[in-house]
Image (cartoon, rainbow, N blue to C red; front, side):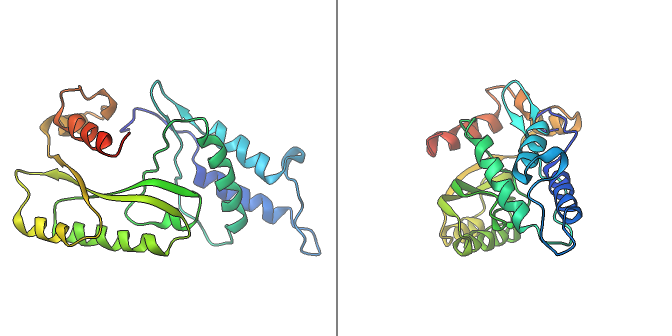
Amino acid sequence: MVLGLELEWKVGDIRAGMLSKVKESLLADGAAMDSIDGGLTKREYLNYEIRSAIAEGDRVDLIAMGRSERPGCYCAVNHNLREVVDAISKNYRYVVIDNEAGMEHLSHRTTRGVQHLILVSDPTQRGIVAAERIASFRHELDIRIENTYLVLNRLHGDLPEPLQQRIGRMDIPLLGIILDDAELAAFEYNARPFLELPDHSPVYTAVADMLRTIGL
């Protein structure tokens, strides 16, 4: 809804379907077959399904993970998924991965490297503590992360001194602040995509300034 795009199929569904097909293809002696439907290899199957699931827009394209992993071993599936995502990524100037709170997606190593890891928090002590914990977890991942930043979202007025002090003790810099904005709220009420925000919008200018700061 934020991008004004509709998805008919999600990667989580494709991944779960792939695991089911792998299980079905197991031979009596426990050896997995190299190919599935129509003689396709597992990677070819994932490549076709994921490319078919891309929602194309005028300015951005979108794929969504959808549901999380169910019981079962997804290691081989995630490996193939990472290769497919890497191949698709080469066709784009920028690739943005929007995660829910946490690092679960990166922990599955469906991404090889991250240039900019941006942690978005509301302007509360609890939100900042959660962001700090997520930031500390990045050191445990076997993924190259070049830069990590904090962004505060929907701040009313000035940044309170206690929050400034807490942020100052973090080992990641504050990239920027997005102020609470009535126009953005109106967009949400009416399900209008944020890409339609005018260039003079405070939210647009704040995000644009942050992108310039990190060289994008």
